[in-house]
Every structure is written in structure tokens, then in C-alpha cells.
Image 1 (cartoon, helix red, strand yellow):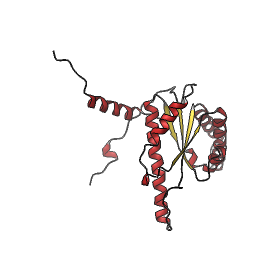
Image 2 (cartoon, rainbow, N blue to C red):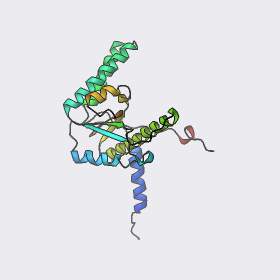
Image 3 (cartoon, one colour):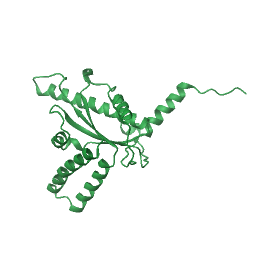
Image 4 (cartoon, helix red, strand yellow):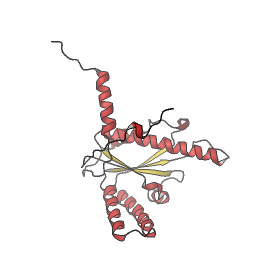
Length: 211
């Protein structure tokens, strides 16, 4: 009987789809720190994303201290409570949302705040091209975040992409003492998973057209 020899190409493809389809938004983590070299490895993967003009407009701030996580959660939470109160949201709902958000942020082993910087992007005199340049920088940063999420999953970490900084960029910038040229876009929580998630995707026919 001829022995079966694994096909490296088939194994690589299987791993690729398992990695891609296995990533989930994880919000509960074990009380276990992430080694600094592993965080640096994941951030390195993020920086290998494509970017507009290859300017690499992404910037990252890593928060792994308890004090930093508490300050960020408290500051963003206070602003969110003000907004929800102004929206006449139910007080009990507000407090529930505050508690859930606080637990997610402070329960993570590390936070990565992703920001955009236009320092090295092109400058245009008209608003239309200026907006396009800004969007290219934002899209570039989002691509880097996807690399980061996939790398985290590859190394056995859970992660969750949160867009809360978009609503309170000045608060995030002030608490973390970020440069004025950094525009916060996302907050990614990281940690060793304490839960599992399953989620399906819509079919191509529901989201794709062919011309």
C-alpha cells in the first residue's frame, strides 16, 4: 500500500481557511498577561498591511497597565453616559452598558488603540481630494487592524475590534497623551480567550454583484 504523503499546498490552504474562518470577536479573557515579545510580533504583522502610497499612516498605542485601562474606560464611559443621557436613554440601560463596556476594556490583558496620522500623506488645496486622501489613510489603518486581528488569532489570542474612539477622539487622545497628529480610530482588546464564539457569514449572492 502506497503511503500517503501530505500535500504542503493543501495543508497550507486548509490552515489559511481555518485561520480566516475561525477568527471571532472575543470579549471575555483569562487573567493572564501577554508577553511583550508576542505583542510586538502581532504589531509587526499589522505594519505589513498595504497602505496608500505606502505611507503607512497607522499609529498604535499599547495600553497594558491596569491604571491605563481604568483611565481609558472611565474617560470614555463618562462621555458615553453623557451622550446616552442626552438621548433620553433609560437609566438602567445606561448603567448596564457602562458595566459591560468597563468589564470588556479592563478585563483585557492589553489594549491597542489604532490611530491615523496624515503627516506623510499628500496635501491638496481642494476639499474633495483632501477628503479622499483622509479616507485612504483611514482605510490603510483598517487594513493594518485586520492584519493585527488575524495575527492575534494565529498566536492563540482573542481580540475584539471596537470603534468607540471615533465618538470621543479628544478624550482618548488626552488620556493617553497622544500627539495631536494622531486621530484615534479603533480600540482593540486582546487577551487569552475565556469564551468561544460561532458566527456564520451571509452568502456571496447577498453581497456581491457581477458585471
